[in-house]
Amino acid sequence: MTKKDLIDQRLVKEAEQMVMRTHTRRHFIKESAMGLGALAMGSLLGGCGSKKKAAHSIAFDPAHPLLPKAPAFFGKAKSVIFLHMAGAPSQLELFDYKPELSKMDGQDCPPSFLEGKQFAFITGVPKMLGPQAAFARHGQSGAWVSEHLPHLSQVVDEVSFLKAVTTDQFNHAPAQLLVHTGSPRLGRPSIGSWVTYGLGTENQNLPGFVVLTSGGSFPDAGKSVWGSGFLPSVYQGVQCRSEGDPVLFIKDPDGMSRDLRKASIEAVNKANMQEYQDYNDPEILSRISQYEMAYRMQITAPDVMNINDEPQYIHEMYGTKPGKACFANNVLLARKLVEKGVRFVQLFDWGWDAHGDNPSNALNIGIINKYRSVDKPVTALLMDLKQRGLLDETLVVWAGEFGRTPMMENRNGAQNPFKGRDHHTEAFTIWMAGGGIKKGYTHGETDEIGYSAVSGKVDAFDIQATILNQLGFDHEQFTYPYQGRPFRLTDVGGKVIQEIIA
Image (cartoon, rainbow, N blue to C red; front, side, top):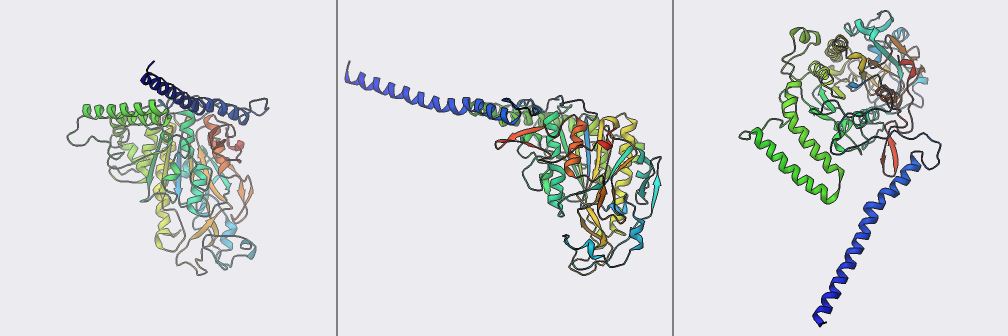
């Protein structure tokens, strides 16, 4: 054997050893990690001799992440329409009738309501503020509804009111995050993301989670309230518009044919597939799936998002304004979307922050326009879903992020020039309808002036738990592994509000 042969042989052996060392590291990291992770997850989820109930397992197919999935148990609701009045409407002008508060109008606020309390703007001693609306009982249920909602008062027997909702957040952004993600801090998935992760969607040509905004601005928490957090990005909300193209850039650019667009997507996905084969990252498959759905949406979305073809009686029923951006258009779109199989539709209507520091947010001036803008379309939504046989399987939720104080806001100790109320954490009202929710029912009550919950107290976690329950999930077992432990929407709280379930 020549010297050159010996050198070549030694080089071959060194190369083989290097390959073996590389393979060993990769084998341990890529292969054994799954086994070790499974052992750890098994102990967390109730395996290895634990008597705890195992968490509901979600079969995640990164290549087809939005395929319909079965819930943990039979759920009465198949889809959700969540109507969020961003800025927090005043329960004292809408649903929580307090005649005793009228008697205290203009008086100094009792010290007991101020001691040890923290408000967003109130300082010193504010004046009490009586209800800025007349109330009456409606329907067979006898629910109290103010004069500001004449249309909704006609359908109260379809609704369950929660009169004693509380929160621990008195600023808009963290309170909105808490309602929608279960945490006042950034980084958690929104409830719409959780729902589409757990159930997928029934229409593969449309997103499973659609977001519609009105009122001229985003909610204070921004797009985080429909973000996917640590869930795969395919589950984040897709914001659509009620005027112009439903999604920006959905049309092919000038000079690009449909066939050319298809060829370009195929080329991009071919590169993405090569990337997946190299790194085995499931998020790449989700990206491929999103590109393909975007291509299909070019055909489907413009038709679904077009309200111009709706019958004239429907436009009159909702009070829509085709071609313009408004809440009524979005509510009609929400009905069309769930009718086409979209799983979760989230509406945000901005402008409900009734401080009374200017005419636009005064309870007796600008906010009256907000009442009028939502009353007719929300009522139409309930009636329309019912006449189409969809209300029983569609859960409708109407909510703000907190309530308003029984006293008038005195910003920096000086009385505001218009009638308004500060943020309030101790009591507010939301309502639910459809999706297996009890009809014509009121749960919980507040004290004689609407300051604090005295019975039936619930919070954001309870509402989230109830929504998931109606969709077929035990909120305590519906989890996602992240940073070494299972996370859930309701964090460590929440109970299903059994009293409002039919």
